[in-house]
Image 1: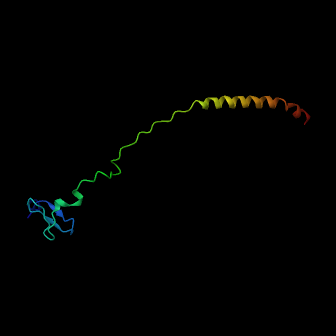
Image 2: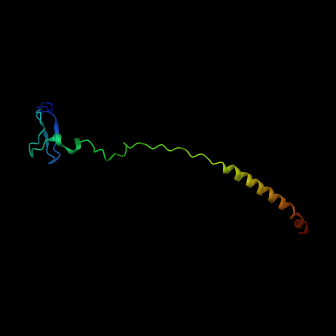
Image 3: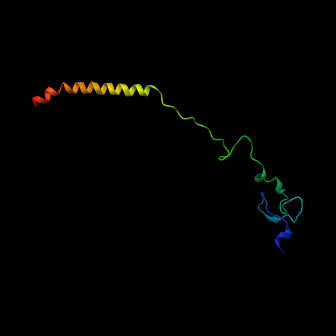
Length: 97
């Protein structure tokens, strides 16, 4: 007898018995009598807890550079010019060596 004549195949969620529903409207386990429509696997997830993939992505805005960064470059140039001026005066010491 082909399996399609027996109806839908089930595995009981309580006692793990394999059975066919014999095309009856209520899929009841023949061993323990559990209604397979009450299976915890068929219940929708609770609203309080979300799955890993159903979370809403957060939008992160890029941080813009601040204006004082340009002033620090000017300070570095001023320090570099001061070093050049100091390097010119120790030139007399180089002649003594």
